[in-house]
Image (cartoon, rainbow, N blue to C red):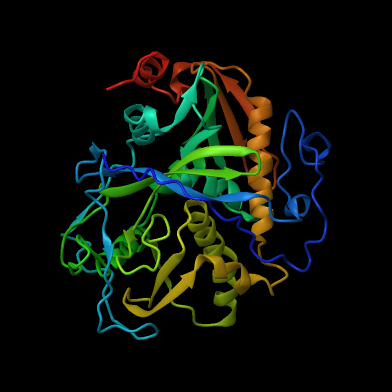
Length: 403
Protein backbone atom coordinates (compact mmCIF):
# COMPACT_ATOMS: atom_id res chain seq x y z
CA UNK A 1 0.00 0.00 0.00
CA UNK A 2 1.32 3.43 -0.88
CA UNK A 3 -1.24 5.82 0.51
CA UNK A 4 -0.71 9.51 0.12
CA UNK A 5 -2.05 10.78 3.41
CA UNK A 6 -0.90 14.34 3.01
CA UNK A 7 -3.78 16.73 3.48
CA UNK A 8 -3.55 20.27 2.26
CA UNK A 9 -5.85 23.24 2.32
CA UNK A 10 -7.68 23.09 -0.97
CA UNK A 11 -8.98 26.11 -2.81
CA UNK A 12 -12.59 26.73 -3.64
CA UNK A 13 -13.20 26.08 -7.32
CA UNK A 14 -15.54 28.42 -9.18
CA UNK A 15 -15.58 28.28 -13.01
CA UNK A 16 -16.75 31.42 -14.75
CA UNK A 17 -20.40 32.35 -14.48
CA UNK A 18 -22.43 32.03 -17.67
CA UNK A 19 -24.09 35.26 -18.76
CA UNK A 20 -27.53 33.69 -19.12
CA UNK A 21 -27.44 31.97 -15.71
CA UNK A 22 -28.80 34.68 -13.44
CA UNK A 23 -31.43 32.86 -11.38
CA UNK A 24 -30.05 32.20 -7.86
CA UNK A 25 -30.63 28.88 -6.14
CA UNK A 26 -32.85 28.83 -3.11
CA UNK A 27 -30.92 28.70 0.16
CA UNK A 28 -33.07 26.08 1.89
CA UNK A 29 -33.34 22.63 0.23
CA UNK A 30 -36.92 22.26 1.44
CA UNK A 31 -37.90 25.28 -0.65
CA UNK A 32 -36.12 24.24 -3.82
CA UNK A 33 -38.66 23.71 -6.63
CA UNK A 34 -36.80 20.68 -7.97
CA UNK A 35 -36.77 18.73 -4.67
CA UNK A 36 -39.62 16.47 -3.54
CA UNK A 37 -39.93 13.25 -1.61
CA UNK A 38 -40.80 11.13 -4.64
CA UNK A 39 -38.90 12.44 -7.67
CA UNK A 40 -36.21 14.87 -8.78
CA UNK A 41 -36.55 17.27 -11.70
CA UNK A 42 -33.60 17.24 -14.11
CA UNK A 43 -34.31 20.27 -16.30
CA UNK A 44 -31.24 22.53 -16.65
CA UNK A 45 -33.27 25.69 -16.01
CA UNK A 46 -33.95 24.50 -12.46
CA UNK A 47 -30.26 24.47 -11.62
CA UNK A 48 -29.00 27.74 -13.04
CA UNK A 49 -27.21 29.96 -10.57
CA UNK A 50 -23.97 30.32 -8.71
CA UNK A 51 -21.42 27.53 -8.71
CA UNK A 52 -21.77 25.57 -5.45
CA UNK A 53 -19.06 25.09 -2.87
CA UNK A 54 -16.64 22.39 -4.06
CA UNK A 55 -13.41 21.48 -2.31
CA UNK A 56 -10.74 20.13 -4.62
CA UNK A 57 -10.15 16.39 -4.07
CA UNK A 58 -7.18 15.26 -2.00
CA UNK A 59 -5.70 11.82 -2.58
CA UNK A 60 -5.72 9.46 0.41
CA UNK A 61 -4.79 6.22 -1.31
CA UNK A 62 -4.32 4.26 -4.51
CA UNK A 63 -4.55 0.74 -5.86
CA UNK A 64 -3.81 -1.22 -9.01
CA UNK A 65 -5.51 -3.96 -11.04
CA UNK A 66 -3.18 -6.33 -12.86
CA UNK A 67 -3.48 -8.12 -16.20
CA UNK A 68 -5.87 -10.65 -14.64
CA UNK A 69 -7.93 -7.96 -12.90
CA UNK A 70 -6.49 -8.87 -9.49
CA UNK A 71 -6.36 -6.15 -6.82
CA UNK A 72 -3.09 -4.78 -5.40
CA UNK A 73 -3.02 -2.03 -2.79
CA UNK A 74 -0.19 -0.12 -4.43
CA UNK A 75 0.74 1.93 -7.50
CA UNK A 76 2.40 -0.78 -9.59
CA UNK A 77 0.19 0.02 -12.59
CA UNK A 78 0.75 3.78 -12.49
CA UNK A 79 2.09 4.96 -15.84
CA UNK A 80 3.96 8.12 -16.69
CA UNK A 81 3.27 10.75 -19.33
CA UNK A 82 6.21 10.63 -21.73
CA UNK A 83 5.26 12.19 -25.09
CA UNK A 84 7.88 11.65 -27.79
CA UNK A 85 10.11 14.73 -28.02
CA UNK A 86 9.87 14.59 -31.80
CA UNK A 87 6.11 15.23 -31.74
CA UNK A 88 4.97 18.80 -31.21
CA UNK A 89 1.44 19.94 -30.33
CA UNK A 90 -0.51 20.60 -33.51
CA UNK A 91 1.73 18.31 -35.55
CA UNK A 92 0.52 15.09 -37.16
CA UNK A 93 2.23 12.13 -35.46
CA UNK A 94 0.50 9.64 -37.75
CA UNK A 95 0.09 6.95 -35.08
CA UNK A 96 -2.11 4.09 -36.28
CA UNK A 97 -4.66 3.50 -33.52
CA UNK A 98 -5.93 0.35 -35.23
CA UNK A 99 -2.54 -1.36 -35.07
CA UNK A 100 -2.62 -4.44 -32.84
CA UNK A 101 -6.40 -4.75 -32.67
CA UNK A 102 -6.38 -8.22 -34.22
CA UNK A 103 -3.48 -9.81 -32.36
CA UNK A 104 -2.28 -7.63 -29.44
CA UNK A 105 -5.50 -6.86 -27.58
CA UNK A 106 -6.79 -8.43 -24.35
CA UNK A 107 -10.33 -7.29 -23.50
CA UNK A 108 -11.75 -7.10 -20.02
CA UNK A 109 -14.83 -9.30 -19.56
CA UNK A 110 -17.67 -6.79 -19.58
CA UNK A 111 -20.14 -9.46 -18.47
CA UNK A 112 -18.36 -9.57 -15.11
CA UNK A 113 -20.04 -6.87 -13.02
CA UNK A 114 -17.60 -5.78 -10.34
CA UNK A 115 -19.74 -3.09 -8.76
CA UNK A 116 -17.90 -1.46 -5.85
CA UNK A 117 -15.64 -4.49 -5.30
CA UNK A 118 -12.26 -2.79 -5.62
CA UNK A 119 -13.22 0.38 -3.71
CA UNK A 120 -14.62 -1.74 -0.88
CA UNK A 121 -11.43 -3.80 -0.82
CA UNK A 122 -9.40 -0.61 -0.44
CA UNK A 123 -11.72 0.69 2.31
CA UNK A 124 -11.52 -2.60 4.22
CA UNK A 125 -7.73 -2.49 4.11
CA UNK A 126 -7.50 1.18 5.11
CA UNK A 127 -10.14 1.77 7.75
CA UNK A 128 -7.60 3.59 9.87
CA UNK A 129 -7.29 6.40 7.31
CA UNK A 130 -11.01 7.11 7.14
CA UNK A 131 -11.70 8.68 10.52
CA UNK A 132 -14.89 6.88 11.51
CA UNK A 133 -16.16 6.96 15.09
CA UNK A 134 -18.90 5.23 17.02
CA UNK A 135 -21.49 3.55 14.83
CA UNK A 136 -20.30 5.49 11.78
CA UNK A 137 -17.32 3.55 10.45
CA UNK A 138 -16.36 6.03 7.72
CA UNK A 139 -16.22 9.78 8.06
CA UNK A 140 -17.81 10.22 4.63
CA UNK A 141 -21.40 10.67 3.49
CA UNK A 142 -20.90 8.78 0.20
CA UNK A 143 -18.63 6.14 -1.33
CA UNK A 144 -18.71 5.70 -5.10
CA UNK A 145 -16.84 5.57 -8.41
CA UNK A 146 -16.00 8.72 -10.33
CA UNK A 147 -17.86 7.35 -13.36
CA UNK A 148 -21.14 7.18 -11.45
CA UNK A 149 -20.98 10.83 -10.43
CA UNK A 150 -19.94 11.78 -13.97
CA UNK A 151 -23.26 10.40 -15.20
CA UNK A 152 -25.08 12.43 -12.56
CA UNK A 153 -23.29 15.65 -13.54
CA UNK A 154 -24.09 15.12 -17.24
CA UNK A 155 -27.78 14.32 -16.62
CA UNK A 156 -29.28 17.80 -17.24
CA UNK A 157 -27.77 17.77 -20.75
CA UNK A 158 -27.98 14.06 -21.59
CA UNK A 159 -30.53 13.15 -24.28
CA UNK A 160 -29.55 9.60 -25.25
CA UNK A 161 -28.77 7.29 -22.32
CA UNK A 162 -30.50 6.81 -18.99
CA UNK A 163 -29.02 5.27 -15.86
CA UNK A 164 -29.72 3.13 -12.81
CA UNK A 165 -27.92 3.84 -9.55
CA UNK A 166 -28.34 1.50 -6.59
CA UNK A 167 -27.83 2.97 -3.11
CA UNK A 168 -27.53 1.37 0.31
CA UNK A 169 -27.05 3.08 3.68
CA UNK A 170 -24.69 1.20 5.97
CA UNK A 171 -23.16 2.43 9.22
CA UNK A 172 -24.08 6.02 8.36
CA UNK A 173 -22.49 6.05 4.89
CA UNK A 174 -24.31 5.88 1.55
CA UNK A 175 -22.82 3.59 -1.08
CA UNK A 176 -23.68 4.27 -4.75
CA UNK A 177 -23.20 1.56 -7.38
CA UNK A 178 -24.36 1.54 -10.99
CA UNK A 179 -26.56 -1.18 -12.48
CA UNK A 180 -26.59 -1.70 -16.22
CA UNK A 181 -29.82 -0.66 -17.92
CA UNK A 182 -31.45 -2.96 -20.45
CA UNK A 183 -30.81 -0.40 -23.15
CA UNK A 184 -27.11 -0.24 -22.25
CA UNK A 185 -26.84 -4.03 -22.10
CA UNK A 186 -28.40 -4.43 -25.53
CA UNK A 187 -26.21 -1.69 -26.96
CA UNK A 188 -23.09 -3.34 -25.52
CA UNK A 189 -24.00 -6.80 -26.82
CA UNK A 190 -24.79 -5.45 -30.30
CA UNK A 191 -21.65 -3.37 -30.79
CA UNK A 192 -20.28 -3.56 -34.30
CA UNK A 193 -16.65 -4.26 -35.18
CA UNK A 194 -16.22 -0.59 -36.07
CA UNK A 195 -17.49 0.42 -32.64
CA UNK A 196 -15.18 -2.10 -30.97
CA UNK A 197 -12.23 -0.71 -32.90
CA UNK A 198 -13.08 2.85 -31.83
CA UNK A 199 -13.05 1.71 -28.20
CA UNK A 200 -9.68 0.05 -28.77
CA UNK A 201 -8.29 3.22 -30.36
CA UNK A 202 -8.58 5.07 -27.06
CA UNK A 203 -6.45 2.50 -25.24
CA UNK A 204 -4.01 2.36 -28.13
CA UNK A 205 -3.60 6.12 -28.00
CA UNK A 206 -2.48 5.82 -24.38
CA UNK A 207 0.24 3.35 -25.37
CA UNK A 208 1.91 6.03 -27.50
CA UNK A 209 2.18 8.47 -24.61
CA UNK A 210 2.69 6.37 -21.47
CA UNK A 211 5.79 4.70 -20.04
CA UNK A 212 6.14 2.34 -17.10
CA UNK A 213 8.71 4.54 -15.35
CA UNK A 214 9.34 8.30 -15.05
CA UNK A 215 12.39 8.10 -17.29
CA UNK A 216 11.14 5.33 -19.58
CA UNK A 217 9.70 5.44 -23.08
CA UNK A 218 6.27 4.39 -24.41
CA UNK A 219 5.92 0.92 -25.95
CA UNK A 220 3.21 1.27 -28.61
CA UNK A 221 3.86 -2.25 -29.92
CA UNK A 222 3.05 -3.87 -26.55
CA UNK A 223 -0.19 -5.77 -25.90
CA UNK A 224 -3.15 -3.57 -24.92
CA UNK A 225 -4.75 -5.22 -21.88
CA UNK A 226 -7.85 -3.44 -20.58
CA UNK A 227 -7.86 -5.47 -17.37
CA UNK A 228 -5.01 -3.32 -16.11
CA UNK A 229 -5.69 -0.10 -14.26
CA UNK A 230 -4.30 2.35 -11.73
CA UNK A 231 -6.89 3.99 -9.48
CA UNK A 232 -6.68 6.98 -7.19
CA UNK A 233 -8.81 7.19 -4.02
CA UNK A 234 -9.73 10.70 -2.94
CA UNK A 235 -11.68 12.74 -0.42
CA UNK A 236 -13.86 15.53 -1.82
CA UNK A 237 -16.75 17.73 -0.74
CA UNK A 238 -19.62 19.28 -2.68
CA UNK A 239 -21.74 21.69 -0.67
CA UNK A 240 -22.74 19.73 2.48
CA UNK A 241 -21.84 16.33 0.99
CA UNK A 242 -18.56 14.61 1.76
CA UNK A 243 -17.52 11.63 -0.31
CA UNK A 244 -14.85 9.05 -0.93
CA UNK A 245 -14.44 8.76 -4.67
CA UNK A 246 -12.20 6.55 -6.78
CA UNK A 247 -11.42 6.63 -10.44
CA UNK A 248 -8.98 5.26 -12.98
CA UNK A 249 -6.04 7.53 -13.78
CA UNK A 250 -4.31 7.30 -17.15
CA UNK A 251 -0.90 8.59 -16.14
CA UNK A 252 1.21 10.92 -14.03
CA UNK A 253 3.34 13.75 -15.45
CA UNK A 254 6.82 13.40 -13.89
CA UNK A 255 7.59 16.97 -15.00
CA UNK A 256 4.44 18.55 -13.54
CA UNK A 257 5.00 21.82 -11.65
CA UNK A 258 2.97 20.43 -8.74
CA UNK A 259 4.04 16.85 -8.09
CA UNK A 260 1.34 16.19 -5.49
CA UNK A 261 -1.51 14.02 -6.80
CA UNK A 262 -4.00 14.61 -8.24
CA UNK A 263 -2.33 17.79 -9.57
CA UNK A 264 0.26 15.73 -11.48
CA UNK A 265 -2.25 13.41 -13.14
CA UNK A 266 -3.10 13.56 -16.84
CA UNK A 267 -6.21 12.34 -18.64
CA UNK A 268 -5.71 11.00 -22.19
CA UNK A 269 -8.51 11.08 -24.77
CA UNK A 270 -8.91 10.28 -28.44
CA UNK A 271 -11.63 11.73 -30.64
CA UNK A 272 -12.62 12.05 -34.27
CA UNK A 273 -10.96 14.79 -36.27
CA UNK A 274 -13.00 18.01 -36.33
CA UNK A 275 -13.59 19.07 -39.92
CA UNK A 276 -16.35 21.71 -39.81
CA UNK A 277 -18.20 24.11 -37.46
CA UNK A 278 -21.03 21.63 -36.87
CA UNK A 279 -18.60 18.99 -35.61
CA UNK A 280 -16.89 21.62 -33.46
CA UNK A 281 -20.21 22.55 -31.81
CA UNK A 282 -21.01 18.89 -31.23
CA UNK A 283 -17.56 18.31 -29.75
CA UNK A 284 -17.94 21.30 -27.42
CA UNK A 285 -21.42 20.31 -26.26
CA UNK A 286 -20.97 16.59 -25.72
CA UNK A 287 -17.31 15.55 -25.60
CA UNK A 288 -16.03 18.52 -23.61
CA UNK A 289 -18.94 18.17 -21.18
CA UNK A 290 -18.00 14.62 -20.30
CA UNK A 291 -14.27 15.32 -20.33
CA UNK A 292 -14.69 18.26 -17.96
CA UNK A 293 -16.93 16.33 -15.56
CA UNK A 294 -14.55 13.36 -15.42
CA UNK A 295 -11.40 15.39 -14.81
CA UNK A 296 -12.97 18.01 -12.54
CA UNK A 297 -14.33 15.39 -10.15
CA UNK A 298 -10.88 13.86 -9.60
CA UNK A 299 -9.01 17.17 -9.65
CA UNK A 300 -7.04 16.25 -12.81
CA UNK A 301 -5.77 19.51 -14.33
CA UNK A 302 -4.71 18.40 -17.82
CA UNK A 303 -6.40 16.53 -20.67
CA UNK A 304 -4.31 15.55 -23.72
CA UNK A 305 -6.43 14.75 -26.77
CA UNK A 306 -5.44 12.97 -29.94
CA UNK A 307 -7.65 13.59 -32.97
CA UNK A 308 -7.85 10.71 -35.45
CA UNK A 309 -8.83 10.68 -39.13
CA UNK A 310 -11.36 8.18 -40.57
CA UNK A 311 -8.54 5.67 -41.10
CA UNK A 312 -7.74 5.73 -37.38
CA UNK A 313 -4.48 7.65 -37.57
CA UNK A 314 -3.71 10.51 -35.19
CA UNK A 315 -3.52 13.76 -37.13
CA UNK A 316 -3.06 16.21 -34.23
CA UNK A 317 -2.56 16.52 -30.48
CA UNK A 318 -4.09 19.19 -28.30
CA UNK A 319 -3.88 20.07 -24.60
CA UNK A 320 -6.94 21.14 -22.63
CA UNK A 321 -6.61 22.58 -19.17
CA UNK A 322 -9.62 21.36 -17.22
CA UNK A 323 -10.08 24.82 -15.69
CA UNK A 324 -10.14 26.41 -19.18
CA UNK A 325 -12.87 24.21 -20.66
CA UNK A 326 -15.77 26.30 -19.25
CA UNK A 327 -14.27 29.33 -21.01
CA UNK A 328 -14.23 27.47 -24.34
CA UNK A 329 -17.97 26.83 -24.30
CA UNK A 330 -19.33 29.88 -22.46
CA UNK A 331 -20.10 31.88 -25.62
CA UNK A 332 -22.42 29.15 -26.93
CA UNK A 333 -25.84 29.91 -25.44
CA UNK A 334 -27.05 26.41 -26.36
CA UNK A 335 -24.15 24.61 -24.76
CA UNK A 336 -23.74 23.42 -21.16
CA UNK A 337 -23.08 25.22 -17.91
CA UNK A 338 -20.72 23.71 -15.30
CA UNK A 339 -22.73 25.33 -12.49
CA UNK A 340 -25.86 23.50 -13.66
CA UNK A 341 -23.98 20.20 -13.60
CA UNK A 342 -22.69 20.72 -10.08
CA UNK A 343 -25.94 22.16 -8.72
CA UNK A 344 -27.82 19.16 -10.07
CA UNK A 345 -25.30 16.79 -8.48
CA UNK A 346 -25.75 18.65 -5.18
CA UNK A 347 -29.52 18.29 -5.50
CA UNK A 348 -29.28 14.61 -6.40
CA UNK A 349 -27.10 13.82 -3.39
CA UNK A 350 -29.56 15.73 -1.17
CA UNK A 351 -32.41 13.77 -2.74
CA UNK A 352 -30.61 10.50 -1.99
CA UNK A 353 -30.06 11.53 1.63
CA UNK A 354 -33.73 12.39 2.01
CA UNK A 355 -34.92 9.12 0.46
CA UNK A 356 -32.46 6.52 1.76
CA UNK A 357 -33.27 6.31 5.46
CA UNK A 358 -33.01 2.61 6.36
CA UNK A 359 -29.50 1.84 7.57
CA UNK A 360 -29.41 -1.73 6.34
CA UNK A 361 -27.15 -3.26 3.64
CA UNK A 362 -30.00 -5.62 2.79
CA UNK A 363 -32.13 -2.73 1.57
CA UNK A 364 -31.32 -1.18 -1.80
CA UNK A 365 -32.86 1.99 -3.17
CA UNK A 366 -32.74 1.93 -6.96
CA UNK A 367 -32.70 5.41 -8.52
CA UNK A 368 -33.62 5.45 -12.20
CA UNK A 369 -33.61 8.11 -14.88
CA UNK A 370 -34.45 8.30 -18.56
CA UNK A 371 -33.92 11.37 -20.78
CA UNK A 372 -36.88 13.72 -20.57
CA UNK A 373 -38.04 12.32 -17.23
CA UNK A 374 -37.54 12.98 -13.54
CA UNK A 375 -35.33 10.84 -11.33
CA UNK A 376 -37.49 8.30 -9.49
CA UNK A 377 -36.72 5.41 -7.15
CA UNK A 378 -37.88 2.02 -5.95
CA UNK A 379 -36.95 -0.02 -2.87
CA UNK A 380 -35.69 -3.61 -3.01
CA UNK A 381 -34.75 -6.28 -0.47
CA UNK A 382 -34.11 -9.12 -2.92
CA UNK A 383 -30.47 -10.28 -2.56
CA UNK A 384 -29.98 -9.91 -6.33
CA UNK A 385 -30.02 -6.13 -5.78
CA UNK A 386 -27.48 -6.06 -2.94
CA UNK A 387 -24.40 -3.91 -3.59
CA UNK A 388 -22.45 -4.59 -0.37
CA UNK A 389 -21.03 -8.13 -0.17
CA UNK A 390 -21.27 -10.13 3.05
CA UNK A 391 -17.48 -10.03 3.61
CA UNK A 392 -17.52 -6.24 3.60
CA UNK A 393 -20.52 -5.95 5.90
CA UNK A 394 -18.89 -8.34 8.34
CA UNK A 395 -15.53 -6.58 8.22
CA UNK A 396 -17.03 -3.12 8.77
CA UNK A 397 -19.25 -4.39 11.56
CA UNK A 398 -16.30 -5.50 13.68
CA UNK A 399 -15.16 -3.22 16.45
CA UNK A 400 -11.48 -4.01 16.00
CA UNK A 401 -9.37 -3.01 13.02
CA UNK A 402 -9.30 -5.45 10.13
CA UNK A 403 -5.99 -6.83 8.91
